[in-house]
Amino acid sequence: MLENLRLKLRDFFKGISIPAFFADFLQSVVIAIAICIAVYVFIATPNQIDGESMEPTFKNGEIILTNKLSEWLGQSDFGKQSGLDYQRGDVVVFQKPGLDDFIKRVVAIPGDKVAIKEGYVYINGKKTDEGYLQPSTFTRGGNFIEEGAEAREVPAGKYFVLGDNRNNSHDSRFLDIGFINRDWLKGKVILRYWPINKFGIVKQGEIKFE
Image (tube, rainbow, N blue to C red; front, side, top):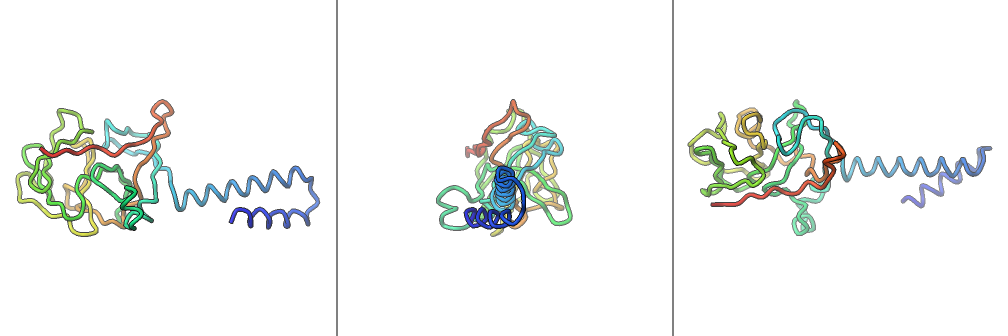
């Protein structure tokens, strides 16, 4: 595809009276822009953290890169075998229709039964140990997943997401968010590239069961 683009550009510039070196430069610029657009549309896109709901993992103003391959390939056999599909512990970006983008963490996947009791999340009747949280974190229930209520099952095609800053996060605990649809998800967060001193790969969070 890129070779075809290069040849078309070469033929285009042949009919224009400009120096050869400048034509080569313009070809390179156009191809680079085409690659950037393809990457942005199909592979990865940048997002800026807005708010405090993922502290201390991510802070307001930091810039991350979201892998969109999970959106395109996650449900395929290749995606499932290669870990591209959404899993517990993944940090994701999603947009509920009519609202801005959110960044949260997947805590429960389709088929899981979720409850909140005494400051902890329970999945399928087991108390979770979320290794990415501060030791003093206390998870309160909301008006969707209520404290001490009977567990709710995550339906097919939906996910239960929470912010790491449980005292300041609007997430699946509340009715106006609830379980999120898969088609709201924009991808997994794979890289933090600003600020530069925090540049690095974003790993899947560890969730253990007691």
